[in-house]
Length: 204
Image 1 (cartoon, rainbow, N blue to C red):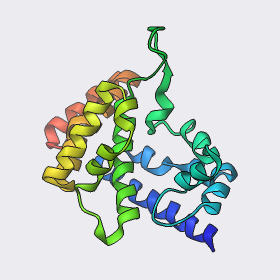
Image 2: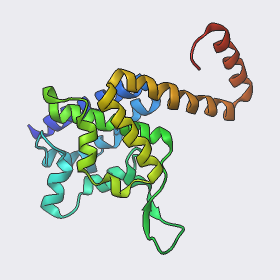
Image 3: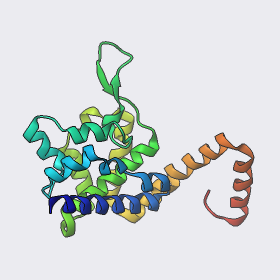
Image 4: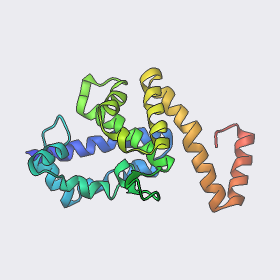
């Protein structure tokens, strides 16, 4: 049953993304990643065009000339670069990629690793997410700063592996994002937690 196989693929993908997001400290994004795939608009098309070795979106696009599931998905999930396509303030440039908030670039990073693992199975290796990026069209649409961040992390993954890269991401991106958020929302809590971290030697 194609619908059941598609459901299993969605669940497996979300588990992989959740594992990656949890490893770098993006807990909420790990829990809520790709929930729109369970909506009728996306799930029905995914089940209809399910093939198992590539995205159903590609098959739907080839059949219909557009992808209704993808059009629905990209407008509801901020970890996709297409969510951030807008008209440039420079009217001579038309549609451009806007700079993505770092937490969504990081979720996209986790998403790309998970997708490569799901579709390649036992043949997965740490070079594939970078290779897939280089073969794709994302580089033409991504904002330069977001592109630089994503490519640097995919390159680090390819060269130094998952454990090193995830630890680097957590320490250099996620923890600073968390600190700034706490500091902005509740400064007293920020200083108390910072003080506790200093005396306990734990990362904050």
